[in-house]
Length: 312
Image 1 (cartoon, rainbow, N blue to C red):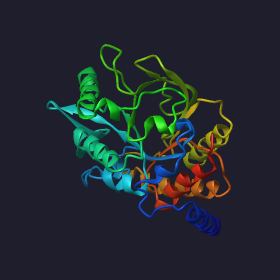
Image 2: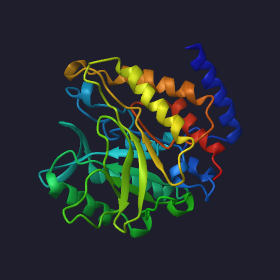
Image 3: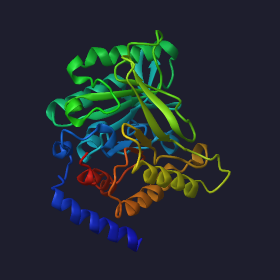
Image 4: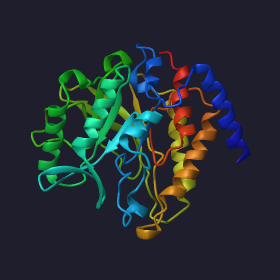
């Protein structure tokens, strides 16, 4: 605990030099235009739309306390949204739990934030929570309806901050019926409950990139999950420091142990998030996209601060 306190103090002192804002509404304004997006350290949230889940499902389905708008204000720029087609409408779900948030409502919040803060960009990952191919098609169609083409980032592996300011880069875990014509990119080979250095992102224009992904979300109660999880997180952080040019990284801190009413998301988040905060006190390299459960402001700020050292 004492090490963590010292890490927080050090990071707070350094971030004061960089001029970090209390709200982080426009932290990307300090990024050089020439920096590649894949080398930007981006704080994110896992199952971003879960703040409004009901009491009966909160123990296993709630991974965030802040709304989408509040997450933006504290500095989150990667949002994990899981739409489910239900009675002709796309709603955000986490597994079987209704999050009481429409997919369109979530997208409009993000759109409004970008319009208010044109120096920023964000990454939105969609992952169908149900509704089959019809739901996937509707997801793509709704994005194209709500966002002007100028607000949709055109993907390539080495795209720069200048290419995406004021835009959303969509990454989809599912692809539409005709297999083409999606906004942003589709992910192929996502590792599921594990890690992979062979995930690929592909745009409709056949622009592609390699993604190093870690999403080890549970061990089913068979081992010491938190230590194994941290080893995977830290290993990928270390490797990505010297990744080949154009490689992307999505490294999940999120995960759970137990099941049903004994699921322990909060405890796991506190432990793993604290480990990363302590680790980053001595780290000066990009770490890519970091989706988290219940991230504290200190950790969000620490991830943002890593961009101080990114000049390429």
